[in-house]
Length: 215
Ligand SMILES: *Cc1c(COP(=O)(O)O)cnc(C)c1O
Image (cartoon, rainbow, N blue to C red; front, side, top):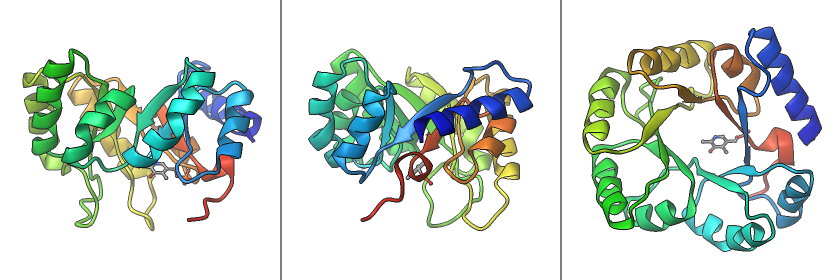
């Protein structure tokens, strides 16, 4: 399965005239049985995404002992009271989605002397139930986060379920470009090739790689 996803990513890179290896695969291991995760580690993959701080705290210390070069990305909503363990555990956080979290992360970054790479989550569909900064507020939010010395490296989005994702990916790329941000976290199992065509640098693939999640 890993080989298959890697091949599809390379095909999409080539189709978009992008350099091979310009897209990073984040293997989304939330809720997956340890055996499946270990299988992908054994095959040599080292970049994983998790949605829940508590779940990641439970399973990754042991995996990391066996595979110390593992890189861990937080891709789920981050509660302010989980910000500290998240900062300690993750190499990147894709869900910076509100001013109160930016302020908390800035204070913790000073205390800890380090901060994971941050992606600002943009609610491209302006869906009321979905996290993320509204597109109209994105430029100001990015400027504020930079003023707090936060290492904002890119943007992230989750397009609305029932819509063509392409316009959402294009919007995210546009916001990134006018703000001088080079990383785009977009594309999941069902649409990562479309995301790559629109400039994704990080695709977050779970079920297509590990199989369906059973909650
Ligand atoms: C679960 C999840 C994914 C992976 O979804 P699949 O459809 O299984 O690939 C990607 N991004 C986020 C934010 C997720 O919560």
